[in-house]
Structures are given as structure tokens and as C-alpha cells.
Length: 171
Image (tube, rainbow, N blue to C red):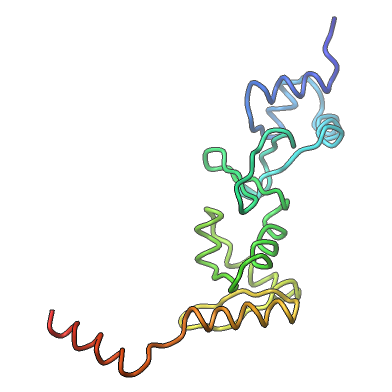
């Protein structure tokens, strides 16, 4: 008895956790549009890395506390594509996040996407030291993030700065 398309799709993902669409269609012996329909019917995630070219089924990834899952260098997010992932990570952060922090967390460069998100009004950014910190567009949430950011990055009191500098000179 032949397998149904859904069974073929599930079997392919049991053999290999991530697929690009063309090799998956070849493996299943269906057209790319048909495979996209099968994926939509079963439920899938596309990668936020590699321009969304990699696919995995909803049932496969076990996301970490940040909603991320990596398979080798392929990143998947429970929030969807990179833009949604960036907005969600910034929204959930206590004190906003820099492009460098987000890049390390996501294992990809995301500065240009962050700038676009700010231009489209989906994120806010504030100059802090040598870099920008990306904040929520929700005014109340952004206010809390800014206050927390200031608290964590408050300058040293002058007396303490002098003591630290003196200790540095002595060593």
C-alpha cells in the first residue's frame, strides 16, 4: 500500500530533521507547490537563518527559554521569521538589547534588520555608550527598559572611580 503525502512528509522528516524545499520535493517525488501545501497542512517552521530556506515540522524542535532552537548552524524560532524573532526578544528583554547581544544570541548578523524594524516603527532605539540599544515601542515597557538599563549601567561614583584608578596604577 502506498503512503499518503502526509506520511511521506513525516517519514522524510524522521530520517532528516531539516530540509530545503527542492530536495524535499525530490525525495517525496512531488512538485514544490504540492510539498508546500503538505507542509502547511501538517505545520512547519522555516528557519530565521539562511533566508528561511530550511524547514522542519512543528513537532520536531524543542525550543530553549528564548524560543530558539538550533540544528547545526540552522536557527528556528517559535516566533517565526527573523523580524518577528527580533521584535519578540526585544519586547521580552528587561533592559532592551544591542545588535551585538541579539547577533550572539541568534548566531547571525542582524543590525540591518534592526534598523529597518526601527524605521517601520516596530522597535525603538536609543544611543547608549558606543552602541544603540533596541527597545519596545510600547511606551510603558520602553520606560521600564530604559530605567533598568540606566540602573545596570550607572556610572561609578567619583570616589569609587578614583579608588579603582589608583588600584590600576599600583598594579
